[in-house]
Length: 330
Image (cartoon, rainbow, N blue to C red; front, side, top):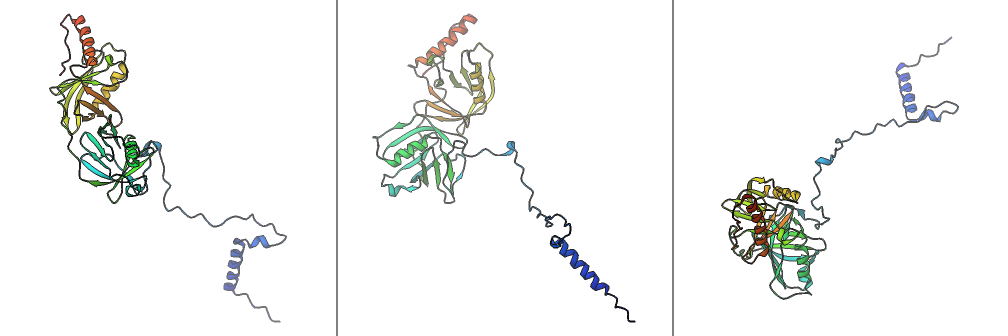
């Protein structure tokens, strides 16, 4: 009697591998009457190419346009660096000025003055901020141009502390709250007019409140003093360097004051060596990059400075028994 042939071990292994693969691919679920294992996904999730970024609140840079100002595509925000430059207005809200059939318009940034020339001719003291600039009181030197779209947009944007951007072509954009103007660089404008010396007379700081109670700033012989409710309530050393009041050793005197918080805030302002813009009539703008303080130089007819000086020194004289002094004026 013939015995059946033995199965080939290699062929048997192939069959077992095939069955195992078939079951792994879900073939077991097709077997009727059998308790099939629950289906599961056997394909592993791919590994991420990079680890997910961890964002921490204290490491995220603040947005460059906290006031909601927007630049057009292609313009990247930049800090103020426009002093001593001149610009031709080439577009308003993306529309070329040639299409607006309006007068040519230019903007010139001096050391302290900003001038814009279109149908109107305007000028104002201006002061750099961290990412923009702020204007003082503008002065109009020609007639009113109510029908000039370019003039109206320029005046609106320049007064808005605009967001500044530059594109690859070297053009800049000034984006305000309601308008944006595009500028191409040209020659700079006229030089700033000469301002009176800082030590010619003290300055009345235009803070809110009664004129007779405004702080008075005196600068002389490399030092400064602010008279605020008492003589030299704030004092320190001072040098004028490249448009900044370089201050040092700023001290606050302990004296009777009903506004000590405001006095301390003013001292902190002067500790950061504020930028300064000086006008031909003795006007001042000071900025620490965020806040702006306006002041004007006292004249012989400045009743506010005389009242402030008189009140301070009268109180000092009564305490010390000395003669009443006055803050000098021009």
